[in-house]
Image (tube, rainbow, N blue to C red; front, side, top):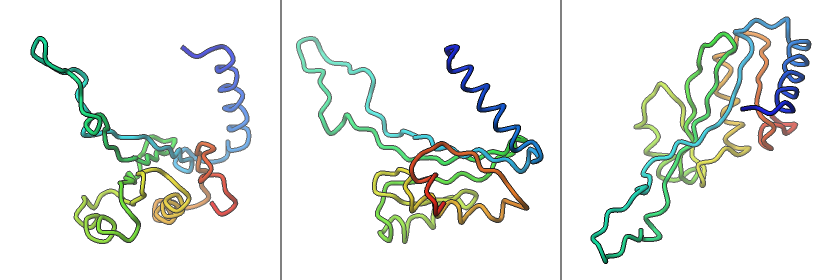
Length: 150
């Protein structure tokens, strides 16, 4: 449940946003955000015989993940997803494997599968075919999103 302070902050942001961008159509306002998608998760419970160890080996405790960059317009339409996968730019995954991934989305590699300034720049280069005129892009204040270059 949001606190009264959070409700006030949200209301203040919405008021300022719509005062500034009220002339834009809903199709001209995009919200971009990243979320982690975990896979290969370690088990939540371990079955063990009575008197036997139920410990999980340290290397089995880590899950792997990709980052999904999701963009939707205020009218509810969605853009293709950018998936950020573990890999080295210019490495095997980047040069060979990404070409085998489904074509309806976009892919980038990053050493930790995170958004960084290089991936953000690449994403901004993907967007023009989906933009027909002046458009507002709403993003959080993550460092890569708020540089002069971006």
